[in-house]
Amino acid sequence: MRKVIVTGGAGFIGSALVRQLVADTAADIVVIDSLTYAASRATLVPLEATGRVRLIVEDIRNGAAMQQIFAQQQPDHVFHLAAETHVDRSIGDPSSFLTTNVMGTFNLLEAARTYWDGLNGEARDAFRFVHVSTDEVYGSLGEDGYFSERTAYDPSSPYSASKAASDHLAKAWQRTYGLPVVISNCSNNYGPFQFPEKLIPLITLNAMEGKPLPVYGKGDNVRDWLYVEDHARALLLIARKGALGETYVVGGRNERTNLHVVQTICEILDRLLPGANPRCDQITFVNDRPGHDHRYAIDASRLESELGWKAAATFETGLEQTVLWYLNNREWWQPLRKSVYAGERLGLLNKTDS
Image (cartoon, rainbow, N blue to C red; front, side):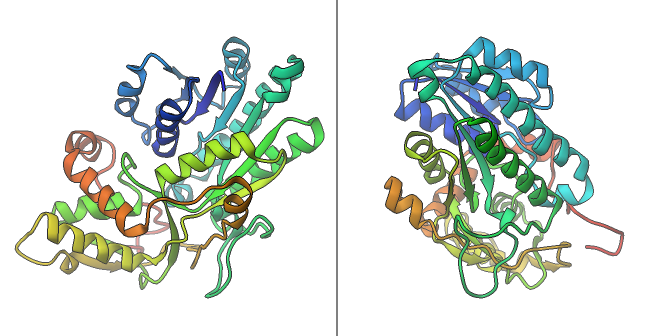
């Protein structure tokens, strides 16, 4: 790789990928990010200090700007991670998810196609567009079975429907125009620098502050947890070795119920930051969110066997590292809790929800 564009590179997974690119490649990295509420300018500052990372503040919904950036920057790899991602927010405001995740992806694919059409020889052959998506496009599993690259799409939320649409666009641009696209669908990510609205940071910070720990329904929904650094390594492999037009699912083989995750965070904090009472006493069961998928689990065999990837973190080691990071980096999350998101319930349809 010579030059790489990472859309959404100031976000949680995007910034982890930028760190991985800085550590494992000699490429220069251009981050395209509109710096929405979930992005963190501060996360990129030490990466920019390397001299290899540049931030362009722009919105992927601006098609003309995307065309201009591709023409000027001339990347040989593109990792598309820019998206609205929080299911609860998609319930209350589906329109922003459609405009960003669907039309924004269309703009990027068209900008990439225009740029790629003008390349020749080795540069044309080396170009890759990695479209990063979610396992939520597959809907909900029963008690058994796993998502794989052959699973039919069955999205349940406005968020997952918008990501499913963007996946289909990326595949169509490969099949119709020959654009060198590879797609990934990952399970739930966790790790440092995650915005506090997501389950693990929300519970960690609420537990530290003595606030209620909201658990949807009975807490028996199951997720397959993937440490964000393992995901970043997978994306680099998919860009380097992935077959064009193909999909690779990425999962950590760490299925846990939401209640188990919350209880484990409480146990870690009780040990690392003892309080007067066990933090599990703060658990509060609340009404489930609409369309809440029961279980996600991924069979990452193809990624493991064909590309040689394997998750390095177990859920136990990764979760403890994550909780420690939030304990030791208050200067990163405290401003967000004060001015952007204080931990309130999202995704409510009416006043009877709680």
